[in-house]
Image (cartoon, rainbow, N blue to C red; front, side, top):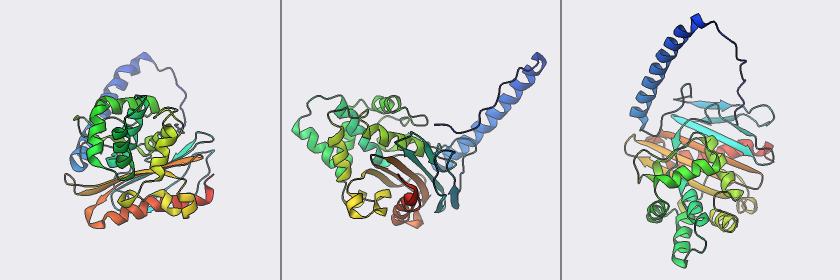
Length: 294
């Protein structure tokens, strides 16, 4: 949902049109050059929209009119983005770069499971067991299997279409499911898409949400860690984390969804800060938003 002010269109004299076209071309070349430099620095998936914050220290952001949330502050080096979608109203709030691109790592596994289940009337027992370990234990071999069974990039394209995502797309090279491009806003939308049944279909949605609530081990972190155990056990999650060799940055992606809201956090920061730094940041977003959550 876009909360930017719409400008009124005005009819311009024809004499201005060549000048406008020339200026537009120059701006397009400048923006393209900036995006290419950013991709070379952070990897091909990391190109943010022009004007997005690139190197954020203390990230403090406000919410759009109609969705009143406290400011969220993320003290980190590198990239930080978050979004929260109120399921009762459909409104989205988040950081000023909530539409900037990052990658999913293992978070995409929730879509790989949903896409397979929606298109399979009666999965065999082996497939269900493989889905369980892919979601609960973030098993990578299972993810490769279901990515291929879903048709590779075509499966990610279905995610974009079915869930109404605006910044997301499959990685340019087939087979790289963890490099799937998303924004924080789209991850929050994906959470709702899973929870409302569009992703996995009416028969398998509750089953998939149950597996997400049973995530365990190293992948059990993120926004739900901010809640007491009796509440945390009701929150469905899927997280992604990887220290990428190509840019020497930790990449984290966190998703948490309830019957009232869906929350996402995307991070990229220097390797020396460690994995726990990202875990703490994902939790801190929920800590700061809790007083205003529905």
